[in-house]
Image (cartoon, rainbow, N blue to C red):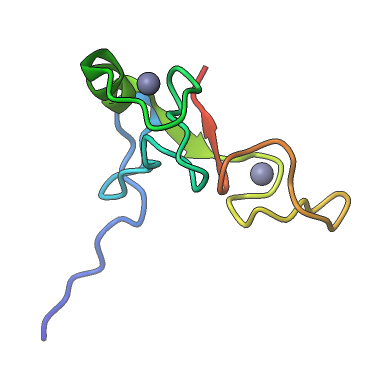
Length: 85
Ligand SMILES: [Zn+2]
Ligand SMILES: [Zn+2]
């Protein structure tokens, strides 16, 4: 093994994390579509729309889902991710 030390973070356009695609399933654990907030959604428009959402690590909890401020479950994010604005 002759692993060269690659730069840990390569600056790229938009500040995206390289090699790590932050994503969420279109449906939450209760079966609701996160685009239209309907249960068991079969709208092809949502399926097209969903991959366009961009996510980043929650600045409040750093992706852990537990707020570093309050120490309780983070209310600011979905599973540690927030939508990029
Ligand atoms: Zn939908
Ligand atoms: Zn959070």
